[in-house]
Amino acid sequence: MNETQQTLKASVIIPMYNAASDIPNLLEALSAQTVIPEEVILVDDGSTDGSVDTAEEWRGNHPEYPIRILKQENRGPAKARNYGADESIGEILIFTDSDCLPDPGWVEGMVAPFNDPSVVGVQGVYQSRQTEAMARFAQLEIEDRYRRMRKNPTIDFIGTYSAAYRKSVFMEQGKFDDRFPIASGEDADLSYRLASKGLKMVFQ
Image: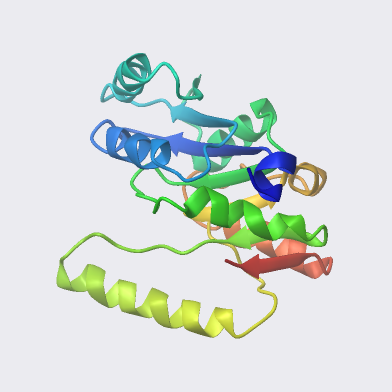
């Protein structure tokens, strides 16, 4: 067990809305991580497609995996992420979306930078598994942005599709602004608040 595993406990938090077709693949990817998080928290945001049943079925088939399922009325992903954070037990909060498929080293990579006590936030990578032309163009733009980010010791924006925060700072700084009813800028808002205080965010 390395230093990261010994000292830093991570909670992975995922807002879930009508994601029944995506959740099993995401959970399979999370269960194959090189470092298993302390818990995975799914926050259902009022789904109507059986997302909760699908998640509960997966959990029943994998009783050894630390998954929790929370429910709320449909109030948006920012509120769902905050609810998960409020209920979490980890020192590090890792966020992703229900349609993402993280690589096996994702959790380990997201936690490692926090061994530097000055780091409060981490932006992880995203790779599209879509083959459509527009998706590939978007992926090329993202990869170009990552190349530029790697040249800088710090960053000023973290997107919630692959994000991690030191929980104590996340809570102190007011979490995500849940007045954003859809995924429309709550990550930029939090990033601005952190950056404006000179808090250190890095790209992993």
